[in-house]
Image 1 (cartoon, helix red, strand yellow):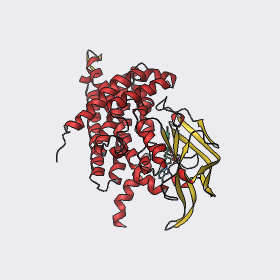
Image 2 (cartoon, helix red, strand yellow):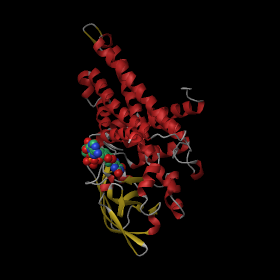
Image 3 (tube, helix red, strand yellow):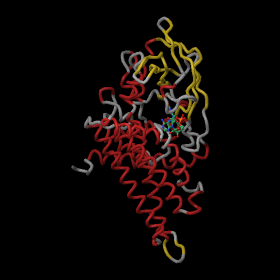
Length: 385
Ligand SMILES: Cc1cc2nc3c(=O)[nH]c(=O)nc-3n(C[C@H](O)[C@H](O)[C@H](O)COP(=O)(O)OP(=O)(O)OC[C@H]3O[C@@H](n4cnc5c(N)ncnc54)[C@H](O)[C@@H]3O)c2cc1C
């Protein structure tokens, strides 16, 4: 067993960290204050990432992507996670599911996403169907050679800047061992398609400037060529491609926690109370010890889950454990870091209160902590049933 990084892995870490510190950190305060990323800034960030050769690093080299394996990509996401999502979204990691594009879909969606000409968003969640994805009401019915979509999606990240959306809808019902369940299919829907509206979503306490949208489909007619994958196989498609996003959340949580730790460490030396550095009080130094231990634990859990995926080993439980632990760790670490700063920790003059707020969403999106526990316990118990 070798825990050291190869030269190439170290290069990924160093390059992305330097980029994040030099190109993203300087804009964070402004983005947080205004709740917006100017269009030109987003384009500038993407162009710099392209110049570095890191754009679409997650997609395969066959389609023009960077071809990073899961472990390498997790290292990249870990560094990117230090920065605000409002800015890091422009780093350009199109959804891996686009590799399922076939025929003309490749020229129309996959290749422009790889080159950065088009931005994608992904829509599953609905007002009445969050964790229970199969409970979705948004539907598509066949009509001649077309499908007609109706319904609403909400909480859809960065749909405001997307050129097209990967949308999951119900396309019928089927019998299953657990009773009747909805059949799900996936469509690629262009912004501007008649009957498709993207509306501003809600203001979130986390990641201000990284917007979510509400999508409305009102008799939105799509030619059958807009379907991604096979009819009624949307769930298979999602399972084949979307597990990676949970690893991403875990990795980003580790990166953000390390940033909070990096702020807290020098402060405990510099800040003096009762005639000595506060780090000399065990009440403070033990916090640091716990934070460092938990961050390392989350880091190794995440990296080893990514490694298992690359080895094609079963990894459902390990990914869920990484997502669960890393996001809960991030909440504890940012909270303790804030505590170490005392009153100043709450002030927007420092990035800490933002890291603390941003941490909150990580336990909710890409499957809540409760859903991760459900996956982990199901995987543990399944062999015994
Ligand atoms: C800022 C933001 C951006 C998002 N971006 C996207 C996006 O781009 N695309 C997209 O499709 N979705 C997106 N989501 C949706 C996100 O994935 C859902 O919020 C999440 O899956 C939870 O669904 P819900 O909010 O409807 O909560 P619910 O599913 O209603 O859950 C409510 C509570 O019940 C618990 N619960 C539910 N079922 C169970 C169970 N079986 N066992 C135990 N507890 C349970 C949950 O853990 C939670 O605590 C985003 C969400 C947010 C907040």
